[in-house]
Structures are given as C-alpha cells and as structure tokens.
Amino acid sequence: MREVAVIGAGLTTFGEKWDTSFRQMCVEAGVKALEDSNVDGNQIDEMFVGNMSGGRFVLQEHISALIADAVGLASTRHIPSTRTEAACASGGLAFRQAYTAVASGMSDIVIAAGVEKMTDVDGGVTTDALAGAADREWEGIYGVTFPSLYAMIAKDYMHRYGLTREQLAQVAVKNHYNGARNPIAQFRKEITIETVMKSTLVADPIRLMDCSPVTDGAGAVILCPLERAKEFTDSPVQVLASTQATDTLALHDRRDISTLDATVAAGNRAFEMAKVDRKDIDFVEVHDCFTIAELCAIEDLGFCEKGKAGIMTENGETALGGKLPINPSGGLKACGHPVGATGIKQICEVVAQLRGEAGGRQVDGAEIGMTHNVGGSGATVVTNILRRAN
Amino acid sequence: MSVPRFWRKQPQRYNIIGTKCETCGSYFYPPRTVCPECRRDGKIVEHKFKGTGKVVTFSIIRTASEPYSYESPYPVAVIELDEGTRMTAPVVCDIEEMEIGMPVKATFRKIVADGDSGMIVYGTKFVPVK
Image (tube, rainbow over all chains, first blue to last red; front, side, top):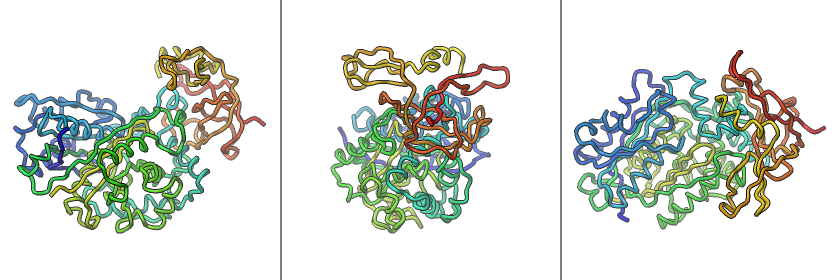
C-alpha cells in the first residue's frame, strides 16, 4: 500500500441553488479542485462520485458518465468513472474508493467528488427518497420518516442517560455559530436555544431546528501518492486512515438503539490504521444529520464515555476554542446536507483547517483532523483521519 | 409500494409469521432467511409469533410523508416481541399514553392506501395492553 495525500479541494456554495443545475455544480466543484491542486485534466487517471439519489431527485442515473462528460474527461480521455452510493455516506464512500485506488497503485491522480441536487422536486418526493435510506419494506411501509428514526434514537438516549432537551438544542446553536463563519454555509446565522425550543415539532422529541436541511451542493478533492504531492502543492494533507463499516439496515435490528456500532467499528479501525490516539485529534467533522446524531458520534468514536456528550457540549468543550471542536464547518445542520456531497465537504473542511485557511472558524494549530460520515440511521459509516504533511 | 411487492409478504405481514433458527434458537421478525450468527450452519424454519411485546422506544410523527399524513400525529415504535426479536410498527393509542416499556399486543389494521382508488395495505399495528 502507498501513502496517499489530498492535494486540492473545491466546493460550491451550499443552499437552495435554484439557478444552478446538477451538471453545473459538478463542473464548478471539479474545476475549483483542479485549480487548487494545480493538476491538469490530462493528468487525471480516474474518478469516483458519491450521489445518493440522482434517480429520484433529478430523474438521472448513470451519474458517473454524466460527470466525466460534463468536466470534459469522457469524450477526450475516456477515464474510468464510478458512482458510489450508501445513502448519506455516498460521498465518504467515493473518497475511500479514491483512496484505495491510489494506495493500491492502480491509479495515480484521482478525483473524489460528491453531488446532490435536492430542490428540483417537491418536499414530498425528497422525504420519500430519503426514506429509501432506511428499510423500505419493514420501516418505511409503516409511515416511519427519517427524522422519526433519529427521534427514536433520541428518545431511547434521553430515557437512559438523562440528556436534557436544552443540551440537545446546544448542538444546533454551536453548529450555527460555526456556520455563520463559513462562507459556503447554507445558514450563516447564529441562533439561540430558544430558537430551537420554539421550532415546530417534527417527530417528538426532534424539532425542525434539530434537523439538517434540504440542500443543493457539490464538492471535489484530488488525491495522489504522497511521494508525488509536492509536485503539485506546498500544502499537501496526508490520509492516515480511511475506513468503513456496516450495521443492520433497520434501526430495530441494532444491538443497542442509541449506539451506532458501525461508528464504533469504523472509528476503531481508523485509529488503528492511522496509529494515532484519540487525544491526538484536533477536531472532528461528524455526521450531525440530527442533533442527537452528533452526540452519538462523539461517544461512539470514543471521545467520551456513553451518555456524556451532552454535558461536554453544554460546557463548550465541542465549540471552537474548546477541548475538541466538533463540526467547525457548521456541520450538516448549518453548512447544509446535500446528501451525496456531505462526505466530500467534510474532507474539504479538514483540508482548509489543516492549511490554516478556515478564517473565522479556524481551529488554532490544527495538525490532525477526522471525518465521520453516516448512511441511513447508521447502516454505513465512513471515517477518515488526515494530517498536515508540509 | 407495488402490488406484487406487498402481496409477496402478505401472509407474513397479516399473521406475524417470521422465522426461527433451530441451530441457535434466535427468532426473526421481520423474517430472515439467513441467521447472522450461524449463517450456513443455521436451520431456518417458519415461526408464528404470539404478537405480544413491549415498546423499546418511540416517536410521535407530526410531519408525515404524504400518504400517511391523514393519520398524523401518530406514534411509531420499536417493539420487542416476547420471543426476543424487534420490529418497527405504528401504535394505535392516545399519543399521551405512549411510554417506554409499555406492554402492547398486535392488531390487524389498515396501514396505508394508494389514493382513493388504489391498493389498501393492511398489516400489523399494536395497541396497549390494559
């Protein structure tokens, strides 16, 4: 296995992008990543693109060819292009596949991208498409929505660990504070605990302001062997670990309702592969599709004891300037959650932080960052650990 | 859900017929055809469940997806059946009654309809045991 580096990253802005098409977003993110890495299109060997549901959101399958075509690498260079899908972890999967392609020696310069265009259909279609991330035949058929699955995790968690509604709300408040400092974020506005507590109940105990939004957006990163990274950039980021794990598709089949065993497994594998300790991690981008998911992630990755992440959040330990900043980008909650692009956005945020380019949301002296990307209610998890390599 | 896709599992959905692994004694509802513990060493047979259990966790759905919105707000729960397996199902009761650990029993109900003239899906919901 070869050591692998990320040499460039590009993101569109995240939001309801009425004037921008699926294709345009892919091209914009891809071109930004190429410019950032000083790589010429002729040097690209292969690409992977994470996309959850082009088929439902824009009635388009065969996304792999569409993107290679749109960026001009299909008709001229005929590069291999592969779509990856694991619901909201599709982008994370694309990154891990790109990592594997470079590490194995199969390809040298590889693009990992992620894209989702969610606002070209009405809200009912979006809700139903997202429900496909759960077990359609044994969860969805009973009218179970995606928020209600995480609501059942939250209910179990609150019952067992005494988490307060206010502690849960603090996750959203903290992520909006960070998002307000991120130029690409969908919501660049700070909120208060009261904003969350007064928002509409979606599925008890989850309120609207506990939920990540419906978002359009795309991202791309360029990977190459670490030994070649300096040909392209002065600030490469080394991939220390890229790991993945699965669990049961349905929430009801999990060993423990409020522990994501796939997070535990992927996280343990990542720390083992990277040969770093939890105390070496300077910040983490976790999958906060709902506020409760951030608390489970912090615990299941092993950063605190089960049941303690709410207190950690309340005490400001996960805020910028805290002991372990979580989601400096604003997370899925404030930065937005274009599902197939989220896993790539997390990598882009780590790259920006490790280069010291994160402006008002910069984690001081960041050397090692981690990402955590979840598909469904926890059936797929991808984790990555990256380190500044210059 | 399409007619054949629902029809295929109609006996299981109407009668809570799942499976059991005779090798390790695990019960499965929803039915599994491979026991995750024993895999190819497992011997899977059909099993009819008693239909009694308790609420493990639940939520009250206020914002439903369209075909289900006629019933909102409605409770959904993870139910642990007495045989030990868990399933997801709606609970028919006053939303204030819902609590973790509440004993419930299965009841045969309409689940959802495909518009005014489409297929009506029936299946298992749960009611509190008084």
